[in-house]
Image (tube, rainbow, N blue to C red; front, side, top):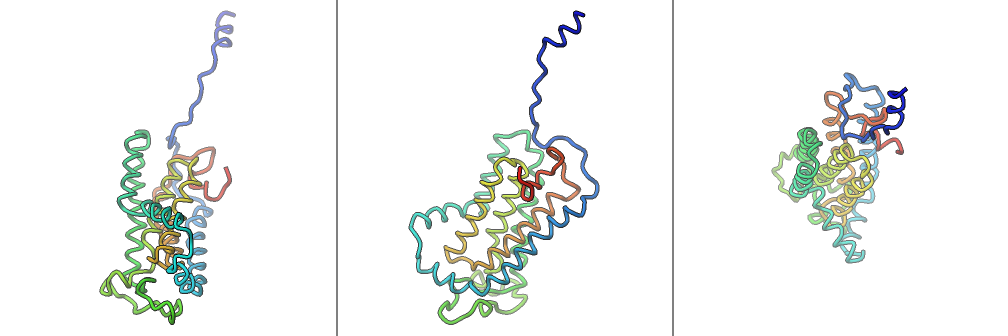
Amino acid sequence: MQVAMNSQSQPAAATLPTPLENVACRVAPPAADYRKWLLPPLVLLLLAAVAVAVDVPLARWASGRNYPRVVRELMSLAEAFGHGVGVTVVLLIVYTLDPARRSALPRAIAAILAAGCGANLVKLFISRSRPGSTDLAHLTGWQTFSNWFPLGGNGSGWQSFPSAHTATAVSLALVLSWLYPQGRRLFVGAAAAVAAQRVLGGAHFLSDVLAGAAVGWWCGYAVLRSGALCGRRGGKSALDIFFVAR
């Protein structure tokens, strides 16, 4: 009787969620995961192909600075989310303030590097002039593309496709959403701001940033899923937050 009373009088220990729970990894992700890996990039690439038709008019409008100055300043600040220095600062903050997630950083870094390097690799095969190096008054979107396999010989002015900044930002958003699902909307918004900055700042056409987002998603998701992703929450992978409302 005494034992029963003690067991009832003592409150149960609170169960706190632990980051990246040590749950058995799946050996082979289901087919749905492959759709999540491939479908978003395919949709983004399709949108990029369609966007070529409006690339030049949009770039012409952006070159006239036909938007409030505060928007230009905010977009300029947003660029850091897709820049190597900004990404390094973000990862250092995670390393310093969240020791429990330090073990996840090697895979996070690999995902971000894969996205940035993947976008730069595509630039070696497709030559396209940047808006600032294009005759926006006379050329169409498809005419901004030049020779195949330039291998970097044309210089930065002909390395517009795809946007490496956007690819890096999208991959970083995936990584941070994996580590901190509760902030996924903030991270997605930051990646979108980087894409907008690249267009409004005249560094890329709209189709460039859409293609960059496709590369960033494909590379980032592939690395995070490599070897099957651990850290499942409530039966759903942390990456499922992009497809399932939580």
